Image 1: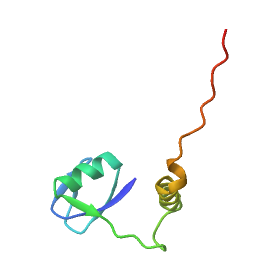
Image 2 (image 1 turned 90 degrees about the horizontal axis):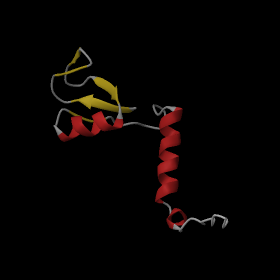
Image 3 (image 1 turned 180 degrees about the vertical axis):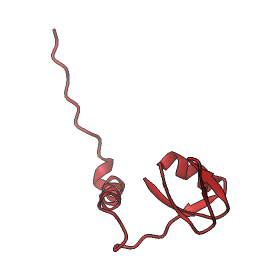
Image 4 (image 1 turned 90 degrees about the vertical axis):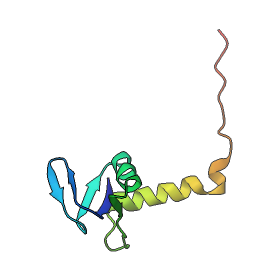
Length: 80
């Protein structure tokens, strides 16, 4: 889930949100809300990050590392 801050009045899942309210949505919905100018990503600090968010950041950093760009080893299937 992505945490966003609503920038203008918005209704999500039947609940009305005012500017400044925080909302947790899926990544796809978060991208759409940001693209429409309805919300922006919430600034998080180490103290406010959840364990899942910390894990996600670590995985993202690992994927972006140079060692992650190596071609994976492929195992050939045995011939019949």
